[in-house]
Each structure stands twice: as C-alpha cells, then as structure tokens.
Image (tube, rainbow, N blue to C red; front, side, top):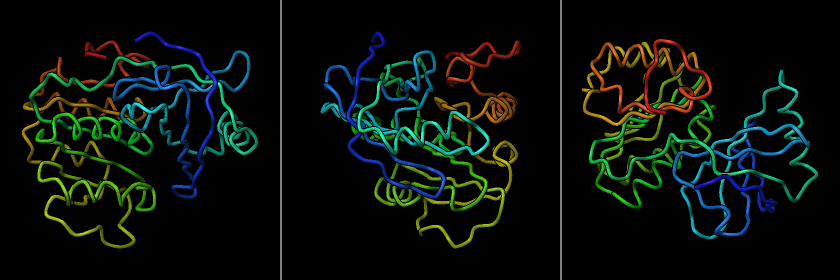
Length: 251
C-alpha cells in the first residue's frame, strides 16, 4: 500500500485521560485503508509532519482512531493540541510503517507497549480478534502510574470476554485502586524489562511486537534475546527509525 496525502474530517475529540486525546478522523474509505500496526503522519505546516500510530484496525468505512499524548516540553505537541482545538479538517499522509500484524502466522502474539504505544497494539488486537479470534494474545502495557492506562476498561473487557487474551499491567508506582477482576488480568510493579526478565512465559514461542521509546524497546529486546526468542519474529518501528548496530531484526 503506497502512502497517500488527503484531507480528513475531525469527527470526534475526546479526553481519554488528562494527558491523552482520542481523535477520530474520517475520509474516503479507499484512501483511509491501512494494515494493523501502521501509522499516519499529520501535517502541522508545509514542511512538518508528525507520526501517530493508527489506533484502530481498518474499519472499511473511512474512519480511524488516534491516541495523541500531550508532552508539555515539546513544542510540536502543543501545536497539535492547538490545531485540534480550532480545525475540523486535517491533512494526513498514510499509511506508513512495515511493522504490521502477520495474519498468516499461527504463533501466539506477545504485544509489549509503553504509554500511547498501546495505540499500535490496539489495532493489532482488534484485527487479530476479528480475523483469527482463537489466536492467543499476551498484552503487556507499561505505564508510570495507574491513571496512564487510559483504555483500561477496554483492555480488561478483552481479557474478561476472550479466553485467549491476557492483560499484564506494569506500573512504576503502586496502583491507586485494584484492576478489574479476572483470571487473565494481572498487575506488576517495576520497570517493564525487569518484569519481563522474571516472567514465566516461554517467549521463544511468540510473534513479538514492541511499541515505545527506543530505550524501552531495546531494554526489552535485550531481555527477550536472553530468553531465547527468534529474532526474525520480533517487530518494532523503532528498528527502522532508531536502529542500533547490534539490532538486525525485522521491521
């Protein structure tokens, strides 16, 4: 799928938590097509484009979802927020990214995300449940504190509804209140790579997708490599935009 530039209608902007906006865009259905795991670029001005993971599988109706976090220290973040407050139409370029769900694979999914890296994983989960609903999914979502799980209700619903979906919440600080009940819902306190180091999961059996900062992704990758994962079955956009000499992985 080659990237296309088009103007979209902003149909919804909602506050998912004090720092994250959920944005729904609508355009021509054929122009908005994308694979689960891809991202788009939002035009701020003539020469500035900002990437955002598409937080929804292709719906076929021309709508898609973004999760946009506000970073006070980043000027571009403030400009995006300002643009969303005044504009009802945005120029975007999509789709981009080769780190997409391998729908032909029969291997279980290990999805590891930090912060709004969850957006990419949300699209992958939606597509997997729709097209191969029996495929096992282990979702690890890392955040600084409890309130950062801005889609906690959705994720716990997945784990309660589908026997093959497990939700592993990881926070640096203690939970402010318990997670929803469910035998496939668990909480760990600590840094995500340290938590993965102690996990009992046989990671070598999985297709693994990672979404977060380069530091977080490579810290987790170091753990996974020590645990015997197959490098050709590990995927992250970080490998394309922030490669390191030791990394010779997929996407």
